[in-house]
Length: 139
Length: 212
Image (cartoon, rainbow over all chains, first blue to last red; front, side, top):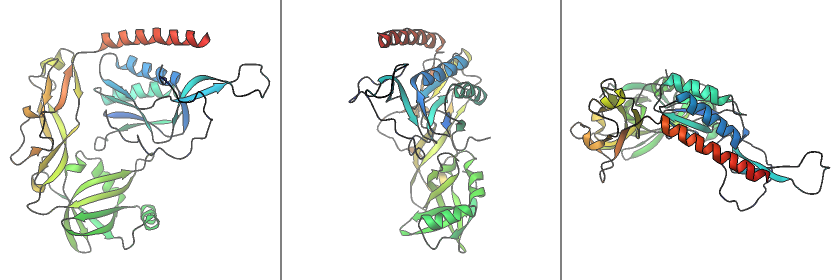
């Protein structure tokens, strides 16, 4: 699973995901992409599950790019612990995804295969998504 | 080069987000025309027309004729802003082209003879490094696409710009090196499976470490 090698601080505020993505909204590597249309925190596990779904569907062809990285530590308190006594310990990593963000890109496969792979991947993600292609390749 | 498409446009007397948004609400997309030593002109064009043109291949490598206030101008699209979610065009930049000038344009690459390529027949995968190639040429001689022939490409071969025949007067913008357009790579089924197994083992290790 993806995680940062080292971080400056162990814990981060939860924050809110507001607005739309201002970068990473266009395809830069592949011919097809999976774009988020709602905001959300995508965990490293979810990214890994989506990656596996895509690579298993593609079998031996194509190339995949992952355009999000889980760099936000998410903390949790242990079960049956009373409130207070400080923030819990970091348990997992998440990527903050804003609407419009391209999360995955694919190339070297047919459009039908890419669409099917992204349908499988989207089912593993906590955000609504849309299949996108390069300008001039619609229809 | 294909025929130029006519785009009727209306002058936009005031710039700024208020008028631009009003234009978008009215089904028009704001645009600017600049270059050729003249003052820039703000215009609006019907969104429907622009979407139709965007859906055709090689938008940035096609000349358009924009009619503004009875005057016709030959232009080349230079930039496009899209809405990040709706994927609707928000704004266009057009460059006026004059005779005798040279422009640099990104021309889409077209791959030929994929069916007869020995590398692809043997199960190789076409790995496209560049979907379009930037070339310097006269505005009236912009190629529709750059043809890359795969009929002799085998697994492990790289297709460079030096192996592509370009029309007279068309030169690649990157001239200091022989850059790669595409490669034919071996099928990665075995590699992918090995990597997956390794990552699976790593993940198991990291969860064990986290539990400790």
